[in-house]
Amino acid sequence: MEEHGQERVGIVDEGGQRLDRALVGLFPDLSRARLQDLVREGHVSRDSGVLRDPSAKVAAGTRLVLDMPPPADPVPEAEAVDLVVAYEDDDLIVIDKPAGLVVHPAPGHAGGTLVNALIAHCGASLSGVGGVRRPGIVHRLDKDTSGLIVVAKNDFAHHGLAAQFADHGRTGPLERAYLAFVWGEPNPAAGTIEASLARSRHNREKIAVVSDETGRHAITHYAVAERYAEASLVRCQLETGRTHQIRVHLAHRGHPLLGDAVYGAAFSTKAAKLGEAARAALIALDRQALHAELLGFAHPRTGETLRFESPLPPDMAALKAALVA
Image (cartoon, rainbow, N blue to C red; front, side, top):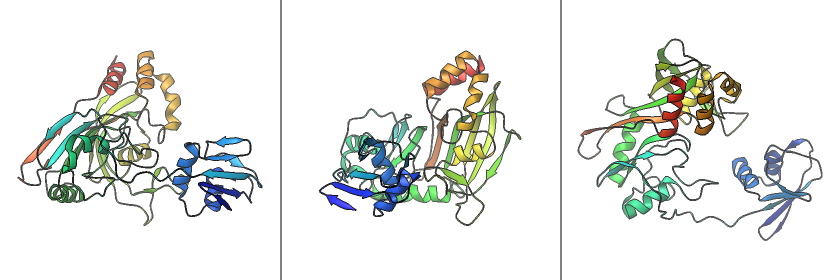
């Protein structure tokens, strides 16, 4: 391996392997996830040009050039992003997050996040418990999941809210409910999914149901709210809060979310069975059909129970109307 300033060069010694795996072997100080991001951002090339697909196969003897970008500023900057504020006081703020908004800076999303917007909105009053890149963040929603999220504006509130989320509502009023459009009709119509979750061994970007000690305990309660020709509207309540929990649990039961390209790709052909209006609404949705509709918790300072509800956003409301028609 050679290094020339910000350029790092390596020669592939084993042909037929994925580009990201070859890069891990050449540059072991960088994680595979980080290298995948660098590939997608156009920082990896060979003699024939830039490579942008981490899964592309590379031949033995291929000369790979990694052009390392300068390190990003670790402190997020304030950015003016419109926010829908459901509630705010000196201790906390509840945001109705739109789909497409990343919660905090991460590789590939250095700016334009909820954190950047909150810094602009709240100034220096956000809790520092989560670190400089996640100030005030107590819990998260996926980028393409819409709905309610609470953020702490000081360390006292952060510790109080974090304790409630860690308790999962067993001894307090914490309540989280989601609306999801799923393929098919779950049977039974109401029940509990209890299945441990862990990072997939085959795809580190996915979460999988596991039966060994590597998994984290996860429980989702669900109930079918409405039935349509090829889909159902399901209301889910979380007893635990694992990454992608609802998406993985429902897919595990054979009812992945409409629009979920990660966990419901095998069901994409079912869209052909929908009516024309529903197909158009699903295409327009362009994300998993998941919305955090309800959030309840005890105010960390006053002890008062606060409860917030968010209606379906326009894209999911349009999907519902098309499925009903």
